[in-house]
Image (cartoon, rainbow, N blue to C red):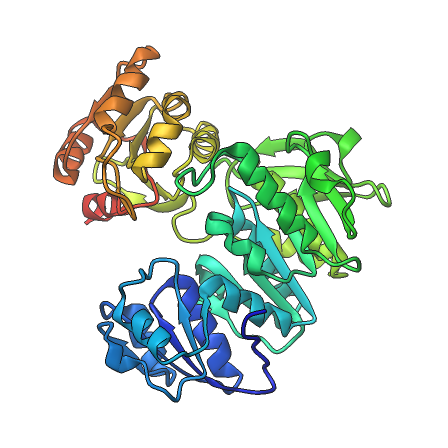
Length: 463
């Protein structure tokens, strides 16, 4: 058993890599509970400046001198390597240390009703939807979300109720360190194949996540997941299902329509009482219908007034980089930025874009990691071919180096082999921007897409 955090016994905690989205949020939560929190990061940022402004000292640069013997606990991200000087000094001084995921789990233990939202796609959006619902209910939740939620002015909110809503990431099995009372599984897809062996390995991890939920807790799960019984059979907790098939679901959607911005309106049907409720969203696409059904099921479990749920969902306009409208080019082309970096996400985004009243859809896609691009190459090609014009940037390496002998040119050849002639590859953002400005017209839509830094293309074009 590793070190346990008790809100009633504040200690001295140091975060190595405190500028990260989740790390900074956890630091804020502990600071609000009376803990003495410090940290370090490689470079100054808006996040580190914000932490300093609320009384959390941040060392810029990671040095062994930052780690002192009076620390009770040191927290590391998965990105910290064994040769990191702060990590080595922590071991030398025999200090207690935890991973970011373990600390998130320990924080979760201190809340009466922790909600963990997992799934290979849709986590940030669904976490945000549930957060908006609880905020509209005046439930005063604590929130940890993997994106910038406008209504809380960032990625974390420190509340004072029993509710803690947290995004739960499957990468490196970090979500297996959590302690949810309500767990949500949105979908299970092949991803993070630099860590997982294959899809079955991923499914095994989601099964273990479901088994974390106690007997008095609830699993909310998408009934469209293949071989669902493998995940749900024999669980101690209650299981609530939502999805497209009424025969397999406790919550489903009927009468789905879209406005000219691809925003869905639908009837949410609840099996338990047969009720039918009209729901309108201000985020686009069929995938957000399913995300909202998960949020509705969670809200019902928490006894939120159903009219409050509907109003909160209507008012939710998305998080940063999720089909985010950025502006228009001088020629009139609408510019949208989206975080999609997996074939399933790309297809969902482009299907949503096809509901728009546009002549052509241009997509500027930046593949994310060599392993993902190679493992899912054919699926990427098929998904991207839904756009009218495909423009590829170089692969964003993230945590990897290129040892696989592939490039965006390889992907471009795959897309052209499907008969999609309007497929282009440019090695620099500057060349991409020139191409866009030369070829986009008034009633076109341009989507910059990917989990790397491709959003700078949208910024540059609009500037």
